[in-house]
Length: 431
Ligand code: LLP
Image (tube, rainbow, N blue to C red; front, side, top):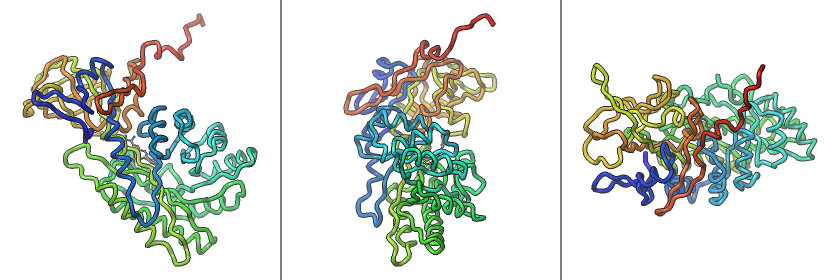
């Protein structure tokens, strides 16, 4: 739920990695995204499980949070990347990630993105539609390369999660359904193309999944399909990329299975599903949220408070849906703390944002100690899909991203200024 180094002293003052939240707010301003590097390292380390029956390679899902320094951090820690756009690929390369450790995704890949991916020499392109096969093969031939490919299948598994972020059912804009011979036709098409080399299959079943079973079912389905392809075409996967999706604790009642348990169960399913005479495929995983969500918090300052007729109490802060769209988009729920206010919750408050929209509510019914205008509120678990989905709605500049470790802080992304808002604008000309 919160960074591992988050602490509250006897007076209720909060710190992360030994730095007072108030000092971070003073130095960098608010709203402010703060990432605890120690927590990032620990969440990554959880994916390194010794003694698994098949190797598991980690490709962090950049869509959850990516910037140049984050890419550098991943490169430094020897982790790969799931990139879903030319922009993510560009950022990853700028940050020093090895292209061979990048898996390139997208249900629509523009001609430019295909050229970028082939030129960079990404470790694999995940093929999502028949329509991209021709252009991809053509580009591979033009550059005289053979491109490693994964075919993305939709395995028809219903993971229990918010419907908006479920991507594994047959009726999905992603990949090829396993029913009706669609995925098989895609495999055939790739196998028939000499400029492409089919190294494996891909399937992502959803996000914020709090059960172990759907992950195992996903591997079982992919193994079953692989056995079919082996019988039919003599082809067998070197790798099964099972996507991301492992959930985190946003609320006290959220109870995700330990990462190691999920990896062990999936690795076992890969071994069990391998017929005699074949080598079990290695697994690839693409965790996003489970690496970054809990490492990140957002610090806001309370700007206004009121009680409306009927009794509802509002605290309004200096950020909101521009830096965290998830409550408005998914009814996502967050926990918050107030800096310097120790003690039992005394108020039930609606934590509202500053954007010009009634739906800009960060937390519906937060139970918090009494506070005052000017106090800092820390919203927990905002490391994933917050900065990544931030906008300039209302022409509000986006916050800075700061990382902390052992009493020191570093800026990973500068706060936007008003001049950034005008950077791409052209002046009015009489017209
Ligand atoms: N791999 C693929 C192919 C994906 O589509 C995703 C997420 C991931 C990996 C990473 O999943 P994670 O480990 O983070 O669950 N904006 C939504 C989440 C969208 C997830 C889309 N795909 C949110 O804020 O909850």
